[in-house]
Length: 204
Image (cartoon, rainbow, N blue to C red; front, side, top):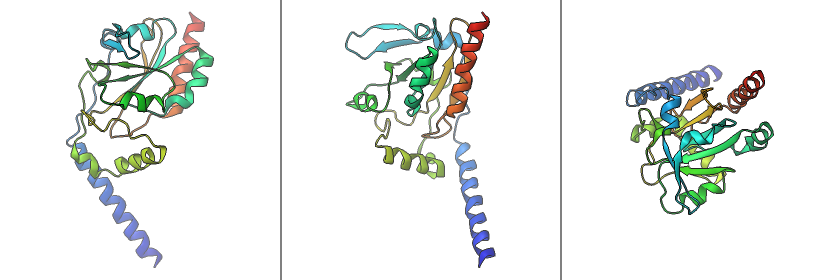
């Protein structure tokens, strides 16, 4: 019985991997962002004063961790505060109560990126083929359990990213691009990048 179970399990894994490979044929591969493009992106405040500013203001003095259409990094906020590094989120649209819903799961400032600079330089979408990926269903189940579904209205099929950016011209220290809905960045990678900010500031 055990060999049969193992064979069925292997067959299932092979099928899942084949489906994932098939869906990747429809997924645009990410292009690396540049510090200049991110820095020149216009961001808008969402606290009622409607101020528009250049994104480089977020990291000029002490660096920043910036997430585009992602959640789950709020757990790092105490560690980031200890190191003097800010945590921000950018969203591409403001529809209904989505921003207010997001605030309950994100401990930081949120800005509107209508130019979608943080989704580029080549915007990437995951269409209906994404629902053939096992990871999408697993990530969806985790989101359901946490109570936060993310952006499921408007242009909700656009894939997001997470960046760790050093102060001044230090540059982009970490760039994580979603390969599917709910593809979260490795928290240890974020911390390692943030530690690099601290190290290089001390050296300076």
